Length: 234
Image (cartoon, rainbow, N blue to C red; front, top):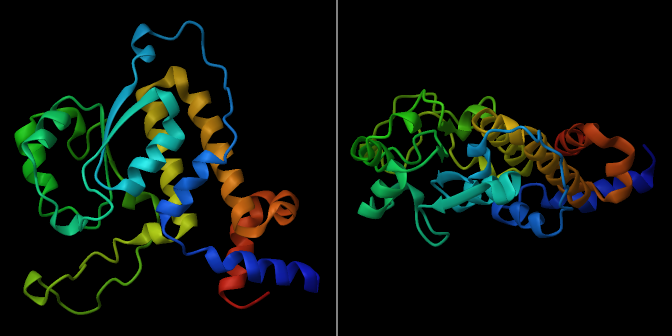
């Protein structure tokens, strides 16, 4: 890689840790890909999946991958603290009718999601069910796992690791991939469409992070470029 490319990486990668809210805004710029789907798909495939997402970032990713095949309800507003969200009665009704629940995980919602699930009485979106996705399972090893004993008396601590992993755009992409897989499992007849939307999102994200030239040249190796930059090896 020559000096000009290194300079380009330096400029572009400065935004690699922007909030996922900004990353998800790429949806407006990403190309909408019309993917074919099986003409014999079951009639139920025509009804959008009802998805509940705990945070705005997750909701944006579900909309980006799902397109018009999802109806998304987001529980926490961008101005609210997701650690201490209010468990509203309206959430119970929405969960009782949901096909999929996507939560951040790593105990971010531990104070309010479990009581809502108990009241919703919807077995398909319980942990382990076909309609449940803990997004943290897509990111690999969490960061900042405490090495000593912690408890709630110590304040806002995260015994299972830092739940704010969506500040990293590449981990956001990993979550988008998990969402596409889950939506495809729930609507097999639309899997090609979900896959095409995911690919469009990935390609646009790569272009925004390293520029169109390097994104086209390195393709799937863009994450390696970002990692090398972060480790100061470029």
